[in-house]
Length: 174
Length: 100
Image (cartoon, rainbow over all chains, first blue to last red; front, side, top):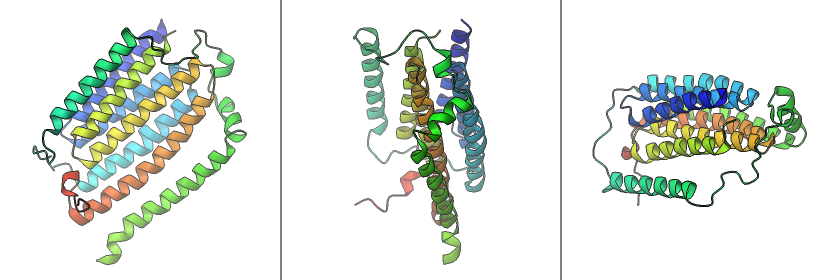
């Protein structure tokens, strides 16, 4: 029961934040909406026993990534209004038709079709095998997925170097 | 316990909102935030499916997606800043040199 209440609260907060991201005219409001969504999703992670991932979500996403976003908003300014004119003709109409079609299809498949989201889902949760503590995550991470782990370390180094190169590009030319 | 279908439905709704924002907005920064929204929706499905199957691999996958998303944000925002310095605009409509 507690899980259902938390799901409703955090789910509604996540949806509200997501809608704010899309409809807000000011990018700062979009960033705040995204922050709300990230926190709500972290709450849903905790509800589902993914403790380490929830902590990483708050620290990396809500902390580091959102700070980066706000810094870039600060750098490039928020006063630029988007033009109302679409360069592609009738794009908004097509997007509306597409979204309506997807929603109708998904709702129909879920309500009337014989559709299972997760085929092998079990109704009982085994605490031992799905409790995402640091120890429980570290074991597959450093045995089965150690190669991918090292690859992500390399990826982060390349990304950091690439960001520095991109930031210096203009200064060298002028 | 909440059935896994609810989580999947919520994640689908989040993904759809993110995709709509990607298609409707013209500000490169907001489009970037919509990408983050979609990534989070997928992460939520992985966590939920992993719990429903009593398997920790979903959480490990989310861990990797988080790292890759962080790298992607760093490079993407650096590109946006570089474009802004050169063109002083963050609207993707203005960036059409590569169009045939």
